[in-house]
Length: 382
Image (cartoon, rainbow, N blue to C red; front, side, top):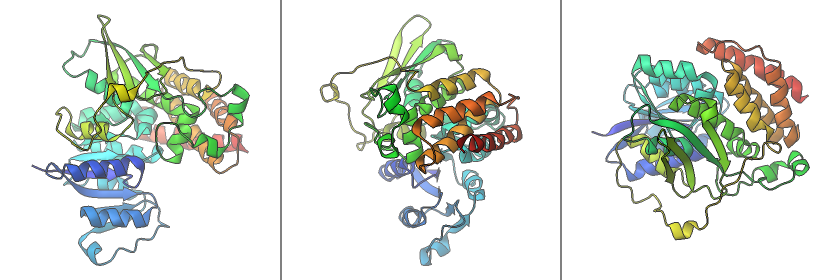
């Protein structure tokens, strides 16, 4: 039986990759719902090509020229479309490819209704890991990561007992400033920060890769997904982005998952987990073409944002929501030319240091911390 899919953020890089996977696997999956932030023209094309029955545009200022074919579809505007798409009765799997805090409520709503969430939205777990995991448990939903690192870990855990995992080593590309001296990193331009050496992603995620904020988000995410302490989750720089994670077990054995930088494989695995199916569209691995694989320590002095994120994880409670919100504000300001690259980590540090940590035991407490942090971060940017 074909499974209905909702893609939240269908016009982003993960959303487009998901649509390519679904096109190749049309006998197994069909698209029920699509949402985008403001790319109305692209969303309209996607809706026409897939026949999605529910189409949502988050930005109310975006105007769709949908006509004719759209009479057979339901078009929505505003943030409410995310939850409606995620909870559509014909949807079995929700691909949450939204960037930022906006993805949280849809993740919780889908899990609460017993759906699988193929999660590329790191912020859902970072902001409210306990709330999200509780929603999955209470609602019977299932959380399957799309991030290449977490997908790699999940694949290495296949067939293992629940208490056999002892340590994770996640890899980071190092971003565009891996070998830059500290002072030069602080004054990097927007164009320089957006020039990622191995991955093609949207601007927010690309800047997060340049500051290594994305790796801090992934450490926090791994803490909730795999139940390890922060002491047992480490990061090394791997410029080739071929090895996605090392998974160490209690007997000292290590398994790793390898692949060329391409998100279509982890997307496919998230859709079919725990099954594996044939897909001729996924690039096959060639160790000779991969070449030398090298590993380096992470330069914490040049990338303090990573340390701030792990610090927030160790603080627990609402601290992770504050880290995420402050980072979103600072990155937005940097992309708009309002602050320097080096200022991003300073804004996060000041905001996090000013926060009185509280339990993150409800979506309301998390969203309140998020609102507070955005105000404080904006103040720090000025």
